[in-house]
Each structure stands twice: as C-alpha cells, then as structure tokens.
Length: 225
Image (cartoon, rainbow, N blue to C red; front, top):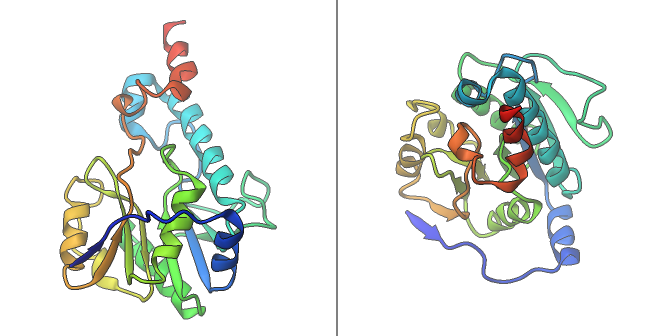
C-alpha cells in the first residue's frame, strides 16, 4: 500500500476553492435524525439522555459550520427520513435517506449512486466529530488528485472520513461496524492501492471523549446541578 503523508504545502483559500470547484466532487454526510433517547447511547450512559441529545445537536451544528462553505456538492443522508426545514439548508445540501440493513450497505449505496451520477471524487463523513474542520475536508478532496483513496483514521480504530475516485464495494463488506478493527480491515483491503492518510482525529462516543475538551464543559457542568 502506498501511504502518502498528509499535505505539507500550504494552499491559500482562493487556490483551494478554485481546485475544488473545477472538479466533480461530492461530500456525503451521514447523519442520524436527532431524537431524544436515540443515538449516542454510550455517551448517554454517563451524562443522561437529555445532555447527550444536546451534545449531538451541538455536533450537528458544528458539521454544518464546517461543510456549508465547501465548494463541492454536498448531500445529507438521513438515517430515517428527510426533514425539509432544519439546520441543513435546502439551498446548500441535497437531501436523501440512507438505504440498507447495516452501515456498510448504506455507505456502499451512497457511493455507488454518487459515481453513477457522474461524480469523480467522493468523500463521506459522519455528523458527530467536533475534531474536524473545513481545512481537513478540503485537504481530503485535494489528496484525491494524486491518490485513489483518502482515509481519516479515528482514535478508536475506525475512520472519520473515507474518500475514493472509483466505486469499491469491498471496502464495505466483512466489517464489524463500530468496532476498533474497522480501520485496519479497511487499510488491508487497500494494501495494493495508493492511499492518503489524514491526521488522526477523535470522534465523540463516550464521556472520556469530551471530558477534557473545553467546548463541552458547559454540558458537563449541567451534570452537577
């Protein structure tokens, strides 16, 4: 596997926008419909359903903030149903509903549809990673100019971003989603490919993921009231 180190060259914003706007790029955002008592179950086990729900909505808003100005096409894939008047502006995001019995099938479907629609570079992210910014997303798409795949490793052994230049169904098969083996298994599938690795990031699944991050302290303080 040809691992490419993260970018060292600095791109000014004008150059980045030009590079991205000139290609058929698509960002897939997988999100769970926000509902009290659903989602972030490991976090809720410590902080309770209401605070976990508030944190999840905060993370959704963060995802909007870091994606809305990207000069790529953007699709929001809801877990259950589309919502027209929500935080995802209809003028910025195309809205769809995930299809399939498990996460792998749903992601494979979204990628397959994207390539069938003529997109040449496609990246997918979730909607619950505070440790992610617009610059990293831009770097992911730019990486696909010279690599066939881009992967954003997560500290828990999964990945927070996956991008590719062609449909690759094997990446979504025989994975135990949510387990710390996903990243290693995915990189094993790509051992003969040119892969760009992004910096490691930490997603939010448990209390330990937020307890030392200042932005989450207002939520934590509510536990003491």
